Amino acid sequence: MTHPPLPPFYRLVARDRVASTNEEARRLAEAGAGEGTLVWAKEQNAGRGRRGRTWSSPPGNLYASLLLRPRCAPSTAAQLGFVTGLALALAIEPMLPPAARPAELKWPNDLLLRGKKAAGILLEASAAADRRLDWLIVGVGVNVLSFPSDTPYAATSLRAEGASGDAAQVLAAFAHWFHRWHERWRRQGFAPVRRAWSQRARGLGAPIVVRLEEETLEGRFADLDDGGCLTLELAGGGRRRVSAGDVFYPGV
Ligand code: BTN
Image: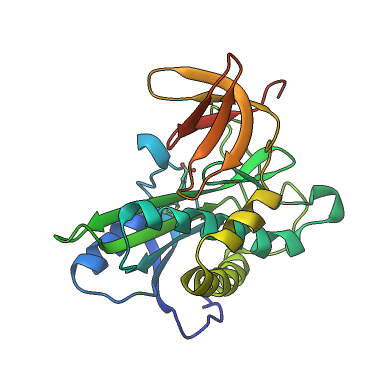
């Protein structure tokens, strides 16, 4: 396949077909591969999504996993999911016709176009004995040419939204923006990322429904906190910090 131009931070590992690029990146991480190793595959036959779901992975879409070795606590590394979402939005937005802009972000890690999911992010990490991270894998799946029709949420693709660009172009643009914001996060911390992410967040300040493993919460999406948690002002009073769950927008 044609290899996209990438900043020198990256070392590209391109494959035709793998089970999961996250799995391949994990294998490389455990064999000692360095930060910046970027696994890219044309298709996956066991692509995985958040919360144990599968990720449909036919040829034509983007499947990539980046290996990072941030020497920080796992809770801090969750911030990199927001760096990733922001980088995806900045990469994809210029490819969209005006009617499909802006690219919006859905807590915690989805990218939406006209309210439909066009990309997802899966973070997987392993902590070292000192409880700092040994490795973190940032997996991104972007529906470039096609999208699944059997999802519990509305989905779309860049092509369906009228965008130009193939998987290699999306990867090159994502790598560029990720590198810039990753550097900024390293130098200045989460505050600028949080601000930029919040500007693109769908539903911030508005009523939302959050489905957790065992309960469903309703309230106002008040804030994204320092740890990347969603702060919900509960409909019945009080506030609740949510670290993992699925967000739904009433009336959609
Ligand atoms: C989600 O929204 O549920 C996250 C989806 C993440 C999918 C990507 S595709 C590349 C990488 N490899 C995987 O197996 N999953 C991620």
